[in-house]
Amino acid sequence: MRVFRILVVYPLLLLGIAYMLGQWWVLKPLTLPASASAEAPLVFEIPPGSSARQSAQRIADAGVDVMPDLLFAWFRLSGDSREIKAGVYEIAPGTTPRQLLGKLVRGEQALRNAQIIEGLTARQAIDALRESPDLTNDLKDLSLEQVMERLGLPGVHPEGRFFPDTYRVVKNAPVSSVLRQAARAMDQRLAQAWEKRDPSSPLRSPEEALILASIIEKETGRDADRARVAGVFSNRLRIGMRLQTDPSVIYGLGDRFDGNLRRADLGTDTPYNTYTRAGLPPTPIALPGMASLMAAVQPARTSALYFVARGDGSSQFSATLPEHNAAVRRFQLGR
Image (spheres, rainbow, N blue to C red):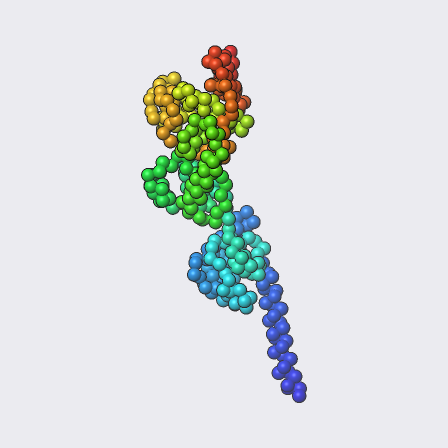
């Protein structure tokens, strides 16, 4: 009888001890490399099709001080080993095996912000994304034309085609994936704006709205002035008056522009010189945001044909050339 009790009690005792050790281990923070921190968590990737065992090995290979077999055993015993999802993940100090498994099962991948800023040119925006440490540069050494081909937009001019916004993407996502999101977003926002256009607008197509919006984006950084600036340009388009907008001239100069726009530059004819050519330039000159898109299609009703920067971010609007010349002397020439 005593032997029977020993045979029964000892295994149960051992199982109890093993259970408690297991509970202690799954609640104990994993040991990470010294370089890992709350600001710079350890990043690892689980490729599509990985088994639970392979996932455990990937975690250990990434630098987590854990036996892969032990981690795999925990995955199996939890009953969730088949629910682990592929993706890019990160582990911050203090993460326990239980918390890690929950993250993998829920597919809580490491996300980062990829930002495209209003007013940048397409080249500037693409270069900024290429240099981001959170993205994979899959567009290295490609020209803008080749970039558009990679995005499935062959022959499309890149300027103005990417909507400025902050996009949440998985860490190490390819730059091309961000640009595809931004291109789709611009198509959607432009369509939304065009549907709300003023029937009296001189613009004849969404493409013209995009071009004008890009000029408005470069001409003012003050929301309160956008519609009035759009009103000035709309008035000029109606009467066939040249737009005479400096940002378009600068865009046409390209690398020749050294930061100082000279009188000679205003007389140098290019397809984008709105001093020498009537109408809108052939393409957008920058990436406009939603406020500029809406201003382009819903311009303010105004008699103004001119405006000049006051120097504080706002503009002075004038209906006649003498009024405008006086405003230029006051705000630009200081007399």
